[in-house]
Amino acid sequence: MTVLFTAIVIFDGWLDGRLSASVADDKPVQGTILGILIAVLIILAQLEFSNLAKAVNLITFTSVSTVTSILLAGTWYWPQFILRMLNIEQGISPQDTLRWNFEVHHSFFIIQFVFFVLAFVFLGLLLYQYACYGAAAILANCGGSFFSIIYLGLFSGFVLAIRIDFGLWPLLMFVFVVKSSDIGAWAFGTLFGKHKFSPKISPTKTWEGMAGATVTAMVVALVFAASFDIMVWWQALIFGFCFAFIAQAGDLVESMIKRDAQQKDSGNKVPGFGGVLDIVDSPLVAAPFAYLFFMLITSGVV
Image (cartoon, rainbow, N blue to C red; front, side, top):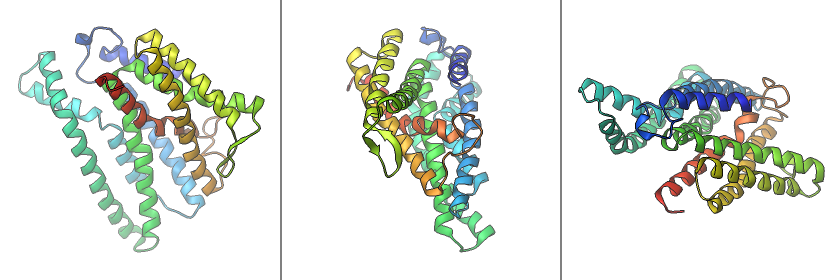
């Protein structure tokens, strides 16, 4: 899975020019292949979330939630595509003009897009509830559906945002640091784990595993930072340290959902891991923090 994901991201970067060191070679529309991959994962994850909800007698409106989640996941993708179409219609083709338009307008578009989508989908969920179930369990059904949209849709949008705004190497750094922290936590916890980290939610997690997650994440962050000139060494150490804890928090979020549903795994689609949610849980929660960190690095605040 690691090799496949890396190959997809690099191929995506090669298609739109971000694999090159020359910014001038960038295409105006970025991250198409990655966006398709995220959409597929959202479909699978929404189905798993629906099954977990059924275990606690909740009904999630999967069709509405899935479409909305994909729309939100592409929050950073749609403005660059729309602006490109507008520039073509106006006969404006220079790359500098396209980039200037994107930088000036895309932040405002993103804010409006998210607000309007969330507002209209909330009303849509209420109409769906009224048409299919009346007033029965309205808070539970609509609340669960809206939760899945934020969790799987809005958070996924930050993954694509990192790719579009900062490039493929920061994206790979973020994903590898987060997932390597999971590996470090499992390895150190299995070998040396004695002191429970979160016994009420995930009894297998230990502080020894947390130490392994931190060390592993910091090493991987240093390797990426040095190899691809993403940030300086001390920033990489901070990144690895922080995201080791954030990744474990993301894992605990999904563990709470599974514990509520009394399920060990979110599904059985991925042998040895469980379901799609069991794989993407940490990157989902960590993605907004990673975008913020890269934004602070780029702006010189950190």
